[in-house]
Length: 335
Ligand code: ADE
Ligand code: ZN
Image (cartoon, rainbow, N blue to C red; front, side, top):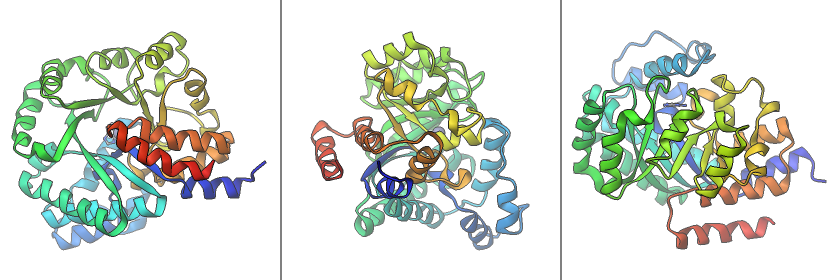
């Protein structure tokens, strides 16, 4: 039997896709300080230690407040470039070879960052990441669910000028009282226009929100609340709806009380296609491979499961079948 050290090496070495990651959730404390100085934006925390002291979250909503402070230092195309390129460097370290990265154009609009700068900053950062580190990517346009549908629709329309940059729509932010049905018209429009749709549901909200999500999406982000509903898991499995799980995020935001109880195997046993992701890694202290490693420690994730989850990461993606095949072949040598 492989020991934990060699299993963790495998977690890092095996090629992976990361499908649930918020660009603004990758800003490291060092970068927050650097950008606050560069942009002359005062923040309450004066040191890396002070920033990190706040990273002790009581809930999703508590986290989202602190997350807002971190994004307050973003101002220019160069800032957006820097965070995008820095994330690519992390991908290289973690052997994430492909990522579907959630971006927040609504935040750019609110902060008066021109959308052109926001998109070009991301694209230029990610393209440099592709050139320097071989990281491939797609962008997920994120709807912010605390908005009204009308506000969200208006923001979305502004981004249609940049639609060559994204073909996936997401839904995130404070889940409770903001169910997927609130954005029915927007999702139906996006679906008609040929966008893929992935929805945060069952992170902090009830399973009913996952049921609503199924009317619109072809993937669910989180979905952890459904772990013991056998009938619903069968539905997810039959409909081939993947879940992008985020173990450390769920622990840090108190969706699960202990990683030792992380219900990964409930999903696997019921043939639900699941993959492992970091969500907001700079805030939760764990990038993609780190999340795998935490499962080695907490639930004794074994070699076969690591390989299966790496394969699933590509299977859960919005890549073409042909591209999935190329990545899946890269995993063969690890078997
Ligand atoms: N935005 C950034 N991180 C999020 C999360 N974990 N859930 C919902 N919205 C988010
Ligand atoms: Zn998320």
